[in-house]
Image 1 (tube, rainbow, N blue to C red):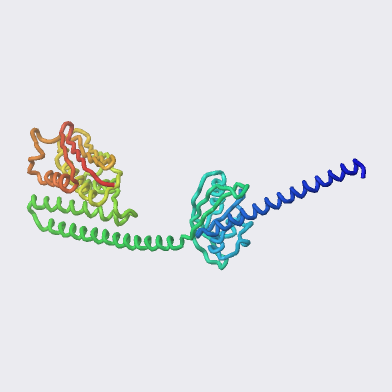
Image 2 (cartoon, rainbow, N blue to C red):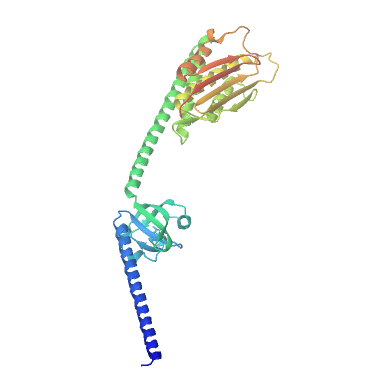
Length: 365
């Protein structure tokens, strides 16, 4: 054998050894990858939640045993499919789902509700958390889902209970309103039976106060919000009724800024105060010889937990030396009572250009 033959022989042996080495390394790598996949799948399958691995196009490339249990199917039934294949018909916005998947793939975790349909046709809701992740050497979306059927059923029971309570509360408001209207009608009947002016006026004032309370419950009955009163529409209706009762509609300019919500506990005394003070303004602020253009402002604002009620006019003002705190006027005494005892607030009265009543009280929520 020549040196040339020996050299060729050695070269062939080296190539065979190199190829054998590559083959052994490849087998080791494949075995390692297989072992890694087995370990990875074993970890996924120990989770109670259903786990889905999706690629950039939103296609399932792997799922765990939890997903098989959730959909009552095999892994092979899901691989290669998209969420559209397991979506309950007409229950999901699939464009929105695709958008959430894209955003999760780009690194922004997302949470959504999804209605699935099992292999037997049963529909069910699930909550899905989407996270960006890696599946071996691939960037993917990891979706973790939980069946929320029981939670949905509990929510439906709570909603049904709330609807029943709202119906009952609405009926209570309706009956209170009716009872107050009956009381108002009885006072009117009694008013028509008396001739003494002071008694007649007292009954008229009382009827107005009852009607003021009735308006609150009438509005609550008509509104969707059964716990709070829209003071804007309430006070406008209240003022309109007083103007009609005094035959002054259109003769007095009234400025409003009262569009806040108050609960019934605060709304009723507020309405009573507005009714009493506005009635007093119509009675005394603009006598027959008043030469100006009658104007009244009613402002009700809220700053945090503090409410400010400001009622004023450009009329003749209070008499010189008049002290409202020691006044024997039943109207002002009632107003002070409502402010201090029912609202827990404070009242200030000034009479520079006309008369201005400033009321401040606190509310919670």
